[in-house]
Length: 230
Image (cartoon, rainbow, N blue to C red; front, top):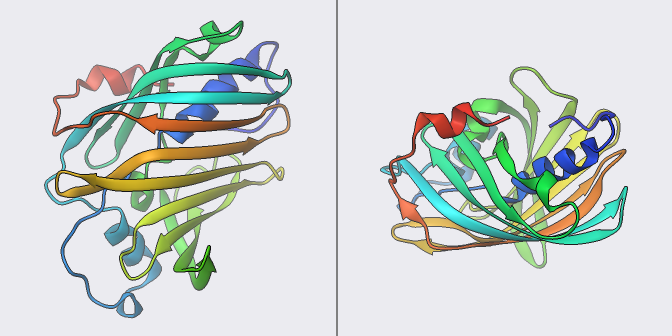
């Protein structure tokens, strides 16, 4: 997702793509793990987002969107998030309320799915930190391939569990996307139950709260879902 200038009504498509980032899907294993001190940044990120045995899933997601710029409006948006190992993901938005509802509908790529992060980003720094009284590790990463305007990304992991709870994408033009996750147990996996996202771009600014429904683990997901994503 590029934060650059868009044509007329392009803000609505940008908003929908930004909402798609709120459907970030993460999966972490449950087995006991060695000390993070013995691993480099890429290894930490890979372990934090791995889910042995999870081949795919589908989950309905409902968003409460507050668009601040270029227009002030609110919308309820519904769709389904899909994931297929190792790094395919998409969000299909099928229902949206309000005057801009029709512009949110569509199928979007989710290039910010945690399970796909090790494939997309190279960790260049690891720092300890504290967030709301909880010890965390902050991983600073750079894109492995085409940056798409991204300057750097910060992933926040709890310790010692290495659960992904936040991410921030910083763009070269000073735009940012901030994501926070509230995770829970789904079968033998830890997956998001709620998410919040704040998008601050040159022409789009919005907040969105996402609530996840019932996951279908190892669901059959057609390749056409990902082929249709833009």
